[in-house]
Length: 123
Image (tube, rainbow, N blue to C red; front, top):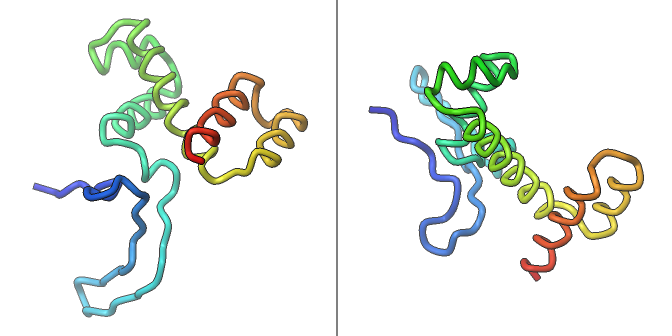
């Protein structure tokens, strides 16, 4: 059984980073502070949903069929993933950066509001 990498510290809930990569063939190790991609920080359930969604080319009917769930459930799961990724983004952006992203059209007003709310809760 393949062990899943935790996406938060089991003690304090903080962000984790990878500190070493090791080649099983020659035993070479590379050490440092390597941060995961935003997708690497998703829960296993969210990642499985994204994998299915992408392999289905975003076709919600196909996602419904592959996962055996209803349209509202697919939409709900998609909203959960969007919220999780938005929270990750908010944790990395200052309030000024969020407002700049809103002004330039990179994010919607509702995304900006959620990100600013998350920033305030983290302070």
